[in-house]
Amino acid sequence: MLFFKSRLISALIVFALIPATAAAGELYTDFPQQIRVGEKYVFYSHGFIVEGTNPRPVNQRWGTYEFPAVKRALADPGYNLIAYHRPAKTDPVLFAEKMAGDIRTLLSQGVNAEDIYLVGFSRGGAISILTSNVLKQEKVNLVILAGCSKYMKKNPQYRIYGKVYSIYETSDGVGSCQFVIDRSPGAQAFEEIAISTGKEHGAFYRPIPQWLVPVKKWLNGVG
Image (cartoon, rainbow, N blue to C red; front, side, top):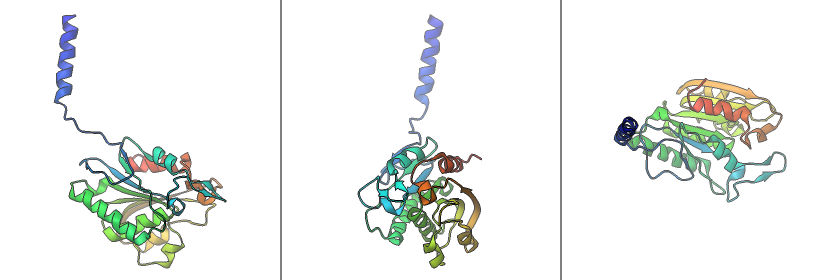
């Protein structure tokens, strides 16, 4: 009995000497007040339909955008997730400036640029590209989900920087991001996959495994 008590006391002493740092895996709806250096930060930007006050708006063709469920599914122990709910009539250019300011704050606090990720769907994907264009930071990473739309084709001045992962749905009218990459010399790497669910743009309205699994693997540096 004395032996086991001694072992237990030793274990408690070792545990007490471990620095009490919080682990990654937090989900924020506002910019975090406390920045934890050495951890990853992922920004998720939702689609246009969610702008406003309803987190679960309904599109007649594609159904309900499950923003709360997407946030919960994207959250992961490997990184902190920041997911803003943008107000109605958000100006994408101005919001990209705000996002760029948030990232500059992370960088100024000591977070590594390669530990920062922008993930955006549709209008959120365009905002992520606009943010990258403002930052011109070649170590910040992007995940674009059906975000290279006509808006990007009509505005060739916008460039992508850093490592880029793109997913689009083959039944959707919004396709490959290759044309944006072609005009973006600051893009350090580009990987793209297509999924075929038949759900058109609505494929990204819910956290289905076809896009969620590869995104989380890429965010965690797996695969």
